[in-house]
Length: 86
Length: 182
Image (cartoon, rainbow over all chains, first blue to last red; front, top):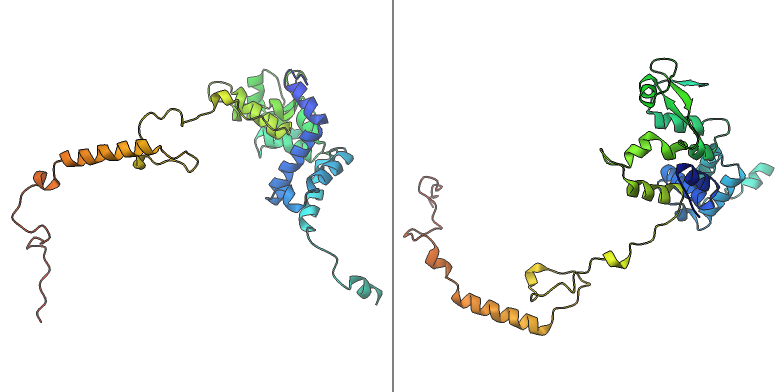
């Protein structure tokens, strides 16, 4: 890869999965104050995939990061379905 | 120039806010945008004209010269010395944080190795790391021999201490506390 100038670096980063992963990682750390790896080995890659799928929408990524942090190690309350039925 | 901004944050933060809170909120615009937010004072510095006095306005530049946060003056000045550029600081930041890649360790030629440079016998007071090899027995023996011979020729402390007839442990009369009577 040959890069000459800031524009080349920017265009390379805009298309590079490594750069996307780095951005996700920094945003995650900024918001949660923990590394993404602390929330599971596949968390970072899942977020990167979701980020790419949303056309690199930062607001949606913020929502995904918040969801990941809030829902970590949580499960639906027991009997929630039964209470709904009654 | 399509939109003006109130002065509430530095231009870099205004630029990031503008991208993040736009409809598309596109991460790629942080890298590829060719505009800067300038007020009258900054516009004068860059040699362009903007409307308004204190409001920040979008000003487009040559895309070959400007590329998002990468060429933003705040970022460039943050990774530079006060009088000169610092391509190494900027390059490390770009590689690790923008491009998301790791840097290779430095070459072996500039590795600092203190072991081979030791020509004097080891002295315990110098201290050493736990990884350092133990000093050779011969060197320790020589060191101890030198220490023993030096101690024999040393002047005793009593010989150079000021001579006094008083007991040094006895405090002066003026400051001595009164003795309690039984």
